[in-house]
Each structure stands twice: as structure tokens, then as C-alpha cells.
Image (tube, rainbow, N blue to C red; front, side, top):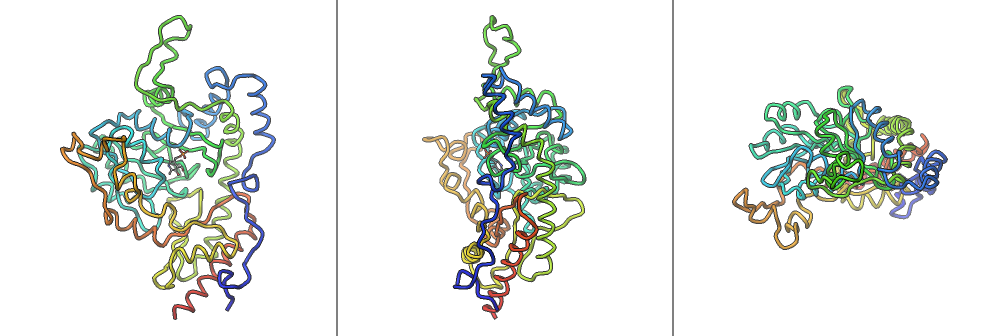
Length: 423
Ligand SMILES: Cc1ncc(COP(=O)(O)O)c(C=O)c1O
């Protein structure tokens, strides 16, 4: 049996894999340069004097098959604008998943609402619709399903509950460009869909966000929210007093970001197709392997693989998650142990209620609840368990089939080694 590199053996590969952190794994080239130069040469760097952000909005809406897209400064801003648009307010609950980025949850708190965490499905780490249904109450203003790692959430039961109770659904698609649920693009199923353009996403402008919807009023409110509530059309001549129609922030996207994002958008289908083909290759290799579970195949799900999640049966292998991840890295395969590590409600900000400086609002002495809100270990047992055996391998459209085979080989090598040790 081959000794793992962590214990002195030869690594499966020495050449670094392409990464989203630099040009080795980012489809950034002449197309982006051309559009950025156009912006620079025009001197129009602000979206309301230029045309690139508006063009991005039009093209993204078309690709998604929706009426409206609103660009903004980040995925967090996109979720915030969407929640503000549907009217999430102090006193409300918003039901979401604890296995996500803080960018899903911070906007809930900034609207003065309480995040209510539903447990997840252990096979996908996506929010479990049955848990959502149990937590929905008269207080619930919105549900925020997150299509984690690009794997679609089972949306039908969530939409059924939401429609029956008149609750808004804001899909967090930061990791799920062009993922499909029953043939429909995620982001177009709920009332609004939110995307991120941060460095690691399927398409990037370094930072940036997009909100999509078919509802004109929601689109207008989201757009106002990203521009300090300024109803620019009411002051079009610059002679009238400004109309600030609602409380908003400056979440605008710049023309430089818009230019990069527009060029990136035109490559998106290729990026997703490549990632899918490569991920299917890895899944085929790992499907029959005992002790590890690749992402499931469901007839209704067409994932877009932001990253590649792998569940490892650590109890049977008698190895810690950290040690397994270190061993995989030593084989030349980058990975993270447990994605965010712990469900979000166990991070300091929520557990210690580090919100709104001195007040802890809306978690401390919530005047609408008549009590405080506490998050404790055990709240979502399946989420807690799932993260403890989750290895996440970065995914990339520039991997070659040989790169994917190296990943498979490294996983197989470690599983065989630890399985033999455990006997
Ligand atoms: C699921 C999810 N939601 C929201 C965000 C927030 O996006 P951003 O970092 O662009 O604010 C991210 C980004 O990491 C994410 O993965």
C-alpha cells in the first residue's frame, strides 16, 4: 500500500492545480481588457454616466430569462437589497440555512430581523424544506434558501409553503450560476434571486452582485435601495430637489466592475459546462468508493459546481477531519475542512450577539419578541454533523481530465490507507 505524502510517501501531484485566486484558474483576458479600456478612455467610471453596468443588467436578465436584473456592489448587498425590497423589517423572522456565508445572514440582521435557522439535508448540506416548513410562523417575512456549492435546493415544497402563507422567497445563488432545478434556472423560482461576483465565483469582477426578478416593483425597490434610495428619474434635469424615496445605502457597482462582469458573463455558459463535465468525471470515479460520498445525482438537479463537496466517513476511517484534509493537501490537492467550520449560529457574532454595538439588537431584549434570542449548540444537529465530515475541494473550469484523475487518485489513496489503519 502506498504511504500518504503526509507520512513521508510521494505526493500524487507536485504541480499546483489551477486556482480561482489567480490567472491560472480565471478566464480573464483580452475581452475584459477591451471593455475596461473603453471605460477608462471614456472617463465614465460611475454607472449613471456610463453604459457598462446597464448593459450587464440587460444581458444578465436575458440570460436568466427574467424581466429585471439590478447590479450592485457585492453578493451581500444583493441579498440586502432583495430583503429590503420585500419589506423585511424589525420584528420579522427570516428562515434560512446555517450552512452558508455570512453574506446571507448579515443582511437579515441589518434589517432588524431575526435569522431563524432551519436544519439541512445531510446528503447535500442544503436547507431541508421540511425543517423550513416547521419554522415558518406568523412572524416569518421571508425564506432565504441557499443553493450551496452550486447544488439546487429542493424548491417546490418551499414555494408551496411560502405561497400558502404569503411569504417572500429570496434565493441566494451566490454559488449557483446557471444551476437548474427541474429544468428551471435557480434564482428565477423565488421572488428574487441574488448573485455574487466576488473573486471565487463562477464569474467575477473582484467584487459585485446581481439581483434578478420578474416583479417590476421589487426591481425598482431593490435598485433604489442600492442607490441611497435616490429616485433619480424624479430629478432628471438636476433642477428639482432630490427625491430620496426610501432608506437605502450606496451599494452601487462601478463601470470598471461592470466592464469586467460583462466580459465574464459572456463566458459563463462555457465555465459552467466545463465545471459540470469535470465534476461528473470525478463523481464517476468516486461513486463506487466506500467511505466517501460525492454529491448525489438527482434527476431534478443540475448543479453548477462552485466547489466540489465530499462527505468522508471519518468515524469508520478513524481519522479526524483536519488530519484527512492535511493529508489531501500533502498529496497536492487543495481542500478545506468543513467549509465554514461550524454552522453560522455558532460563530461569535451570533452566539455572543455582537450586533449593533451597544444594543445587541435584534437578538438582545428584542422588543418585538419580548425576550432575547439565543443560539446554542444542538440547534441544527444535522448541519453540525455534516460539517464535521465535509471536505470541500475547490473546482475550476481550467482543470484537465488528468487533474481530476489526480484528485480521485489522492482521495482513493487516503481512503485505502486509513481504512487499512482502522482495521
Ligand atoms: C452563499 C453566499 N451568499 C452570499 C455571499 C456574499 O457574497 P459577497 O462576498 O459577494 O458579499 C457569498 C459569498 O461568499 C456566498 O457564498
